[in-house]
Length: 111
Image (cartoon, rainbow, N blue to C red):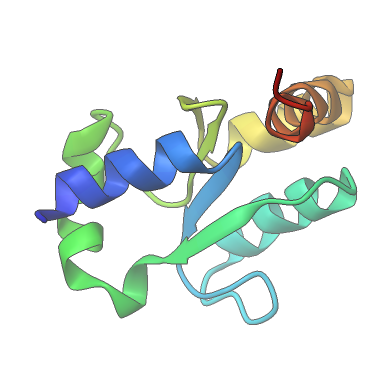
């Protein structure tokens, strides 16, 4: 499976995913650190991909959604943006709602 297909699966199979440099516990850049802290502060679960450990993802992700920088945050299958946008959404309270709605869809009982 090529990198773009793996990215597509990760984005579609996780309600919230951050592509970042490092991990939430050990970020390797300040932007990744601040964005992952904002996600964690909502209290909602999220997945992460350390782009430094996967050169194919690192090289392919900017083409996936035409967004050139890291981190990249996807909620409910859609690119939300990077660090600045995520922090703005957090400060306005909108990030909490977006994440709750996305996570809630996956926790809903199936009929």
